[in-house]
Image (cartoon, rainbow, N blue to C red):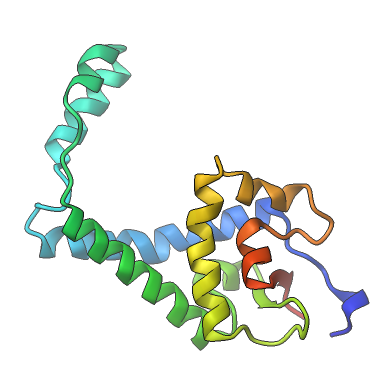
Length: 163
């Protein structure tokens, strides 16, 4: 593919791909971690009570008892999610399941080839930076001509439609 023939993947197609990845990868992984932790990772009953109070309009009760989580199990989940995503990027040449379904992939911005392991790691860590900038790092995708988010700029990657 030549640089002039590139079709950049925009905000909404990438958003849908991320949503699909959450359903296909993160949700099953979360269920496994929850059961492995024997419920210690996340207090579902407290969350359910908090959600019920919020939906009933009782904001004070909803905010009075924060949901208890286990930092250890949360870190296990985050690390396993990180490893899973990188394995998919490497195995399926720049595409997680959601990206494959949406016919998009991550490539090196200069060569348009596969991304390196260091780029994959930088990009994954860049998601955290993109989030902590009040999501501006993700929203950049909607406003840039090359549709790159902060994490793409950090890792020197682009997301394009497959040939």
